[in-house]
Amino acid sequence: MQRPDFDDDDGSRHHHSPLNPLPWAVWLLALPVIAFEAAFALGQAGLVGGNAAIGWRQMAYQRFAYVPDYARAMWEAQTYPWPEVARIVTYPFVHASFTHAAMVLVFVLALGKMVGEIFRPLAMLAVFFGSAIAGALVYTAVPVTQAPLYGGYPAVYGLVGAFTYILWARLGAQQSNRARAFTLIGFLMFIQLVFGLIFGTGWDWIAEVTGFSAGFGLSFVVGPGGFQRALAQLRQR
Image 1 (cartoon, helix red, strand yellow):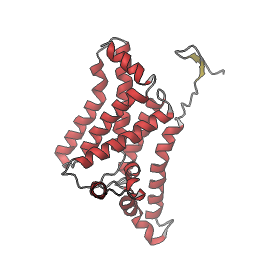
Image 2: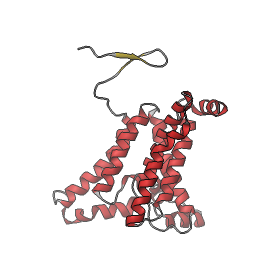
Image 3: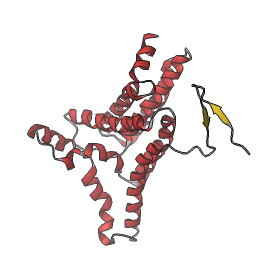
Image 4: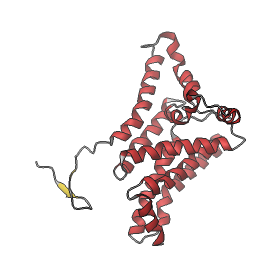
């Protein structure tokens, strides 16, 4: 059977695959998480690495997690060794457990696909890493934060921000209530509040909320049409 073609908004013909392959940028973000967890699982099972492999997750955590006290010390000394600076973009790929990694991976694949269908690959990567960086910096700026930051949630919340921007722009074009675009982040914040009340919570939510704000804000610049389109939309309000 011949695969149907659809016209894009610009009138061009576009062939849609029935398998809906993921954008390469999504795989670029997902594969490190998958590789880490595969290595940890094989090490725990004793299939690779010998006895030392049992501690691989802890070693990765110590090597790649973002430590706010390290950042503060670098700022005070005005020295920035690359292995420590790199933590600000490596921490989203190291997780506390398989379940933690799996939840992040689900969000990366789902949101990455939705955002990647609208944003260019490099724009989506800018949102992901820009949100991770912004989340870590604001987390560091809060004096009470001492616990290391690890896991992909701040960056994932950035993808939530990009997805919210897409809905916000679409609702605006339809002359609908743009506040509806924030339903997803409202739901996620409510779930996080409930879990925090039941199990307790740290200060990670600062990085996550910042990640969402950064993702939403960056989308005005790197999203389709860039800043000029965003400015035109704001003028229509």
